Amino acid sequence: MTYRLTGAAWGLIVTAVLVTVPLSLRDRLPEPLATHWSDRPDNSAPFTAHLVITLLLWLLPWALLMGIALRGRALERRLGRGYWWGFLFAWGLFSIGVEVSTLYANLDRASWQEAELPGWTVLAVLGASAAAGVIAGALGRGEPDQAPPARERAPRLRLRPGQRSVWVSRLGNPWLLALTAISAVALVVTIAVGLVLGLPANVWASMAFAFLIAAVSGAMTGTISVRVTEDGVAVGFGPFGWPVRRIRLSAIDRAWSEPRYPSQVGGWGLRGVPGSATLMLRGGDCLVIRYKSGGQFVISIDDAERGASLINGLIEERVA
Amino acid sequence: MLLTLDLNDARPLHEQVAGAIRRAIGDGSYAPGDRLPPARDLADALGINANTVLRALRELRDEGLLEFRRGRGVSVARQAEGRALIVQRMRELLEEAERRGYRREDLIEILKELP
Image (cartoon, rainbow over all chains, first blue to last red; front, side, top):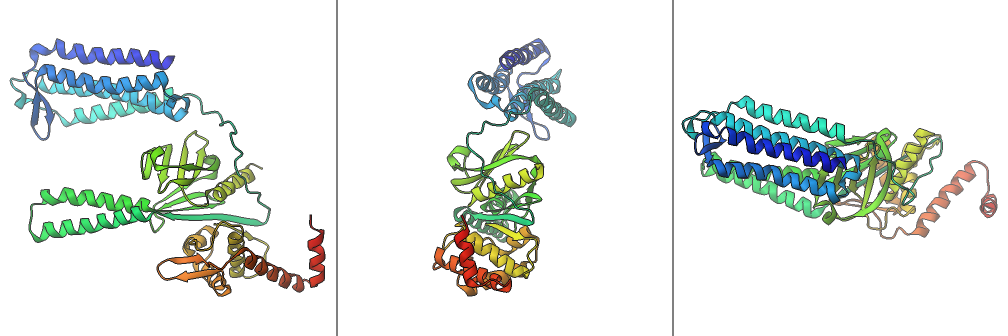
């Protein structure tokens, strides 16, 4: 109930500001308005068009958030609530900030080419909305999630004293690795062609940059290795197992294995948001690590059930 | 691959590692033809030297349990079947028992008494 009420009230407040402030200042603004800056103003829009676009940029995401609040399941989890509140307030404040700084830059100018946008206003708008989002998310996320109902018994390895157990698994996706190799070749070819033919850098540099991103991200997520030891879980990215994401056992609630598919998580690679991420290299058996904070980390890996049973066994041993 | 080492085991480390890998394959976590994790990953997880793991892997290759293939790493040999593993483990058990003064008949008796 608070979601709908607060969301609706906040939506009305932001909309009212976005409508009344530009209208009340209309006499002091040039027509058209400067709406985009690089070094100097480089784009303009008529007053009405600007007003409509600004409103839509606020109202469409807001409508989406209200839709989630009305019927989505995202708010059942603490993480979902945090992101919902954070995004609601951050985006509202961001919309107001962009509008106010645009009006401020245009205020009392004879024409849009003279409008000046001081750099600090951009930083202030970004900083203030990000801070509002973090605060709203922290205040609105509520209590930690209850432990999930035991819909299945988590596998558990019985550890004996005097024994030391570790679990190691590694997975590579040949298709992702092939794409990575193609990107790397394309990167080299692009740079070579650009330099040999003496083309201007702006022609090939952005292409080379895109290939570089594809090659590096592909190399990082085309192969993964997972280790479970007494020190916790370590997920190594890439063929050399570096960088490593380490998860302390004390942060883990429990683990299990479950089939997941790229269609469920939005594709291959590292997917999702911090706190609820999936490392998807292939559909099928996945290791699901549930954090005590309520989030979870899903890793597509072979032999996941044994890994999960060792994690659960080690957690139990720590408690005992 | 789930590996378990006994901290009180007095045997050389490479033998213990070989035994742990043998058990892991016997448990069915790896089918014939499957690739093993790289020796470096296993060594890191166990906190031991990679050469010790490599020595264990070579022993298992000599036993016929593993295959080394250039460019494809180490994989479980196709002929490694359940019975071969059991025989291998029984041979170990027999050696262990004889070192401790038990005879073959004693072992059979113990086996029968087990629930």
